[in-house]
Image (cartoon, rainbow, N blue to C red; front, side, top):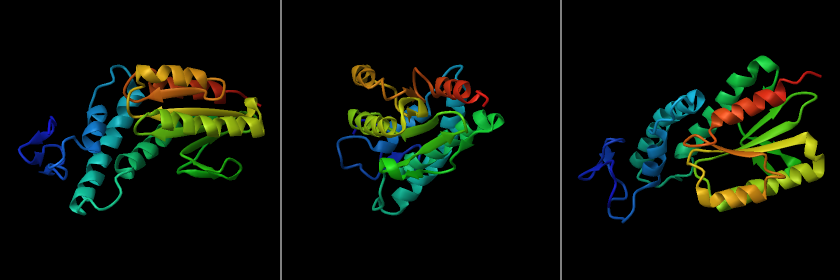
Length: 210
């Protein structure tokens, strides 16, 4: 298996034996760590979020491996990623009197749990979908929620954004563009447009006074 974090049978990041050594491809952790460890020059918030997520993800993946790789892997990186993105949004918007949810919040009318919601009286409500990996399926799923939110509550009353750990691959640009009437923006921690741009956009939206 060709994994740059593997030395013999040992994962040099987790400092444990590789749990999928007999397989032919690297694990999800290696993919996630590659982006968490990559520098994002001059992108202060992106760097801060990735550094916070990195240490937490390492500990969660260690626990996963120690548990015999029987527990689900989905949230090993996803839970700290959601937590730290919400924290970044809260830090930036706190002076503006904005409510930022501390955890996922049910949206009964949309049939979903939003990873993060942002609200302030007199301003649109924002839903932020947070993904470790950007895929066509993830984009379509978020678009469906965005379409429903704006159909039920009005275009001007909702904003829907995505944040992803992975870069926004060029082959996804057409799909994102096709949904731009309902999906207000897709941002990354690993490439343009960075989450720093999203934070500036949210600051602009919620700097409004009633």
